[in-house]
Length: 59
Image 1 (cartoon, rainbow, N blue to C red):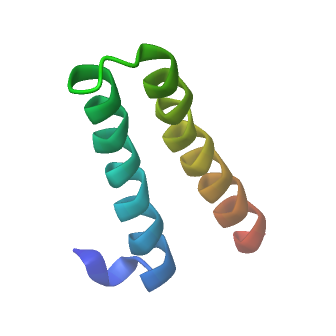
Image 2 (cartoon, helix red, strand yellow; image 1 turned 180 degrees about the vertical axis):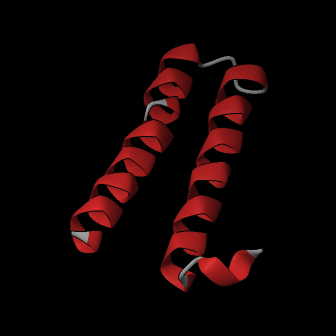
């Protein structure tokens, strides 16, 4: 299944998952919702950028 992905894409996906867990940690454990929201907005941005680059490289 993961043979279709490049190593850089897998690394970015792992980074996104780590950022989601970091955001949850800030929200639940440290009770800092503003920082959690700030960090929680990074994963969709990173994934959107990854999708954009993949679309540009395929054309």
